[in-house]
Each structure stands twice: as C-alpha cells, then as structure tokens.
Amino acid sequence: MVDRVVGSQPQLILDVACGPGAVTRRLARMTSAHIIGLDLSATMLAQGQRDMAHSFLDDRVSLVRARAEELPFGDATFDALTFTYLLRYVSDPAETLRDMARVVKPGGPISSLEFAVPSQRWWHIAWWIYTRVLLPVGGLVLGGRHWFDAGRFLGPSISQHYQQYSLEWTREAWHRAGIDHVEFRTMSRGGGVIISGYRRDK
Image (tube, rainbow, N blue to C red; front, side, top):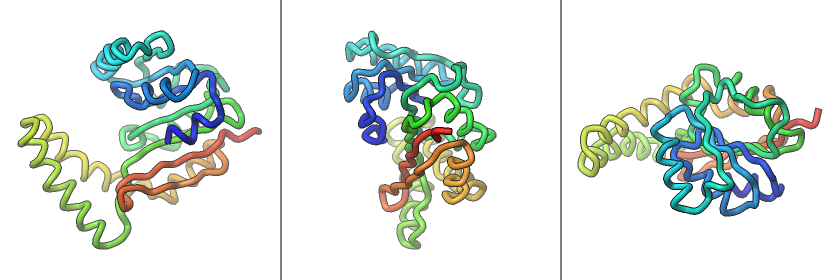
C-alpha cells in the first residue's frame, strides 16, 4: 500500500484511520513528506503521538482527531492519501470515498489496505475457523477478555461488510468517487486486499 504512494514523491500525505500510526511512521520513513494522520480515537492518537516522538518523527507528522466521513480539509489539499481498515466502520462507504478523493489533488495516488474474505472454498473454511475460533481463543489466552471480545468481533464484522459491499461494488464505488485506474491486489490467500488508484484529473 505504501509503495503505491511513495513513488509519486508526495510532499503532503493524509493517512486516514491511522490508529496509533504504524502506516504514518512508515510513510515518514520512506518519504520526505509531511504526513497528517487522522483518526477518530483519542486513545489511538495519544499512543501515536508518543510513538512519533520516540521515533523522532514528530517534526514531520501531525495527528488530527476527526471523522473520515467529514474531513476538515479543503479540496485538492493533499498529494496522496492512504487509509487502512476503514470502510467497515463508516455508515456510508461510498460517501466516505468521495470525501477522501475530494481532498486529493488531481492525479494524486490513493491506496488502502482492508481485510477481505477468501473466495476459494478451502481457504474460506480455514479463514472462517481462524477468525471464529483461533483468533478469539488466542486473544483470550494472550491478552484477556478484552482481546477475546476484539477477536470475536473481527470475523463477523468482515463477513457482514462484504455481504453488503462486495469487492465489485467497492471497485465501482472508487470509480464513482472520482478515482481512476483502480487496481486490486489480494493477499493472505484472499484474507486481505490492497486497493489503489489515482484521483481523476477532471
């Protein structure tokens, strides 16, 4: 995902749904750009701020608390944009994509990383067992009740999202948002997907 963005040598990048800033830090290390990381969680952003200072990146990274559906930036502000594990958490994925595309300059790259559901039968069965059984149990053993609940939530959340918004729907939503040359790259036997494209020139 990051590689699809850094090749354009952006000077200002928006990282939406940045969480504690893992992608934000990678963008900072691989470019000379200033990066704005945006997330709704104050707790995540506080951890991210500590990590940026520890990594000596806080001079090139700004963290902002805001909603991905209502970005507090003007049109065509950013040279590039990334977002991670976002669309399952917004009420209107299509409108969120439109607003993200709005703040990117024409021709600027947009790239995302999302979970997905494997389409091949045996990989789908293995994925279902992992997300419904192994992940929650592993979370309970290693992290306690909180991580058990997080693990139990993840699999059904992914399945429900793709029952409503298929990958084909997602591709069309990117196009309708004004993003061209949309490409999909699946990973982890279909358990993840990188989606990339470029803000339409006109």
